[in-house]
Length: 81
Image (cartoon, rainbow, N blue to C red):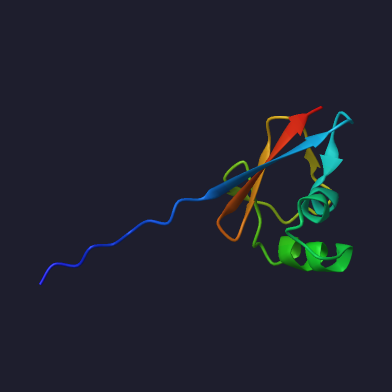
């Protein structure tokens, strides 16, 4: 018996900012990945968020245009206005 595995494609969401950087917790709220600041804090500190493909537990991490954060198989990219 053969088993075929399908790899789910990751969704990519791009958000534009008008500042030189944005904090990770604020970015997760802006994107809608976290409902509140408290929710963003919890998911980041639990190691559920990856920044540029590495787990990040610093909620104050500065994201700049070109950076990406991943949460629940969705990639959120930072872009400049």
